[in-house]
Amino acid sequence: MSYTITLRNCAFYARHGAFEQEATLGQRFFVDIVMDVEADAALEDDEVESTVHYGLAYGIVERIVTESRRNLIETLAKDIAKALCAWSPQIRRAEITVRKPSVPIPGILDHAEVRVEHFA
Image 1 (cartoon, rainbow, N blue to C red):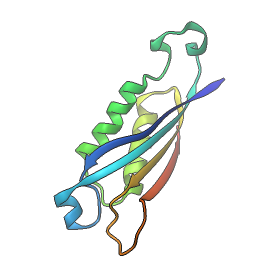
Image 2: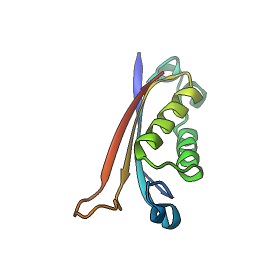
Image 3: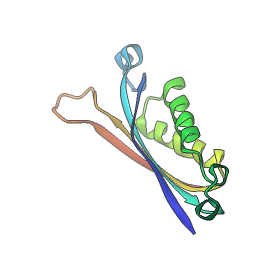
């Protein structure tokens, strides 16, 4: 048996991007985290120790987004997905979506978005 933990629209300020201005100025990034989790005892024993602590998962994502720098949000999403699966053996799949609202292109749009899946 498994279940899904989802964290939506986590906001971070970071300096990812291929252009020098993005590295210098930085901008907001929004991350959605979907983790398919092996249930083990969590659904029966109601103990935090039996599940994936999503507060700790958030901290891992925050560290990766704010303390590293990537040219591509694709690579950033992959880094997050792999780190979450490596952190907890209960996470069988991580789906990470990274949104970048301030895209440096000559057009009007809400954001650029990339979604990456990683299977443990």
